[in-house]
Length: 80
Image (tube, rainbow, N blue to C red; front, top):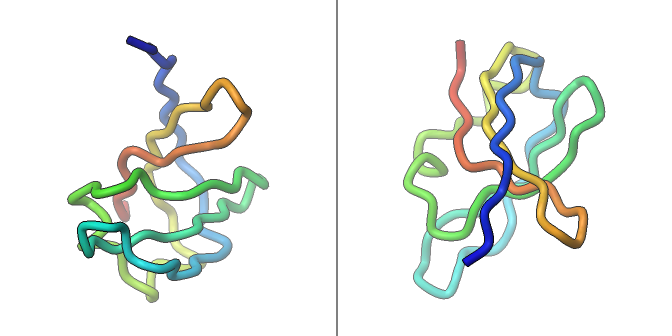
């Protein structure tokens, strides 16, 4: 079992791009924060249903981890 160090950060949401749904039909997004962090939402994560386009330019609290291959996976994203 792989464990990841979880990071939490507050930043403005610079860009939000809708990706194709997961195999189970759940939404996915490519998220770019104002500080340059760029990654994708976790597959089949429930919080992805709450993400809105009007969050762009506003502050968000982002929780994420970095995989062994260096990819950023957002595990939670909420507008503040």
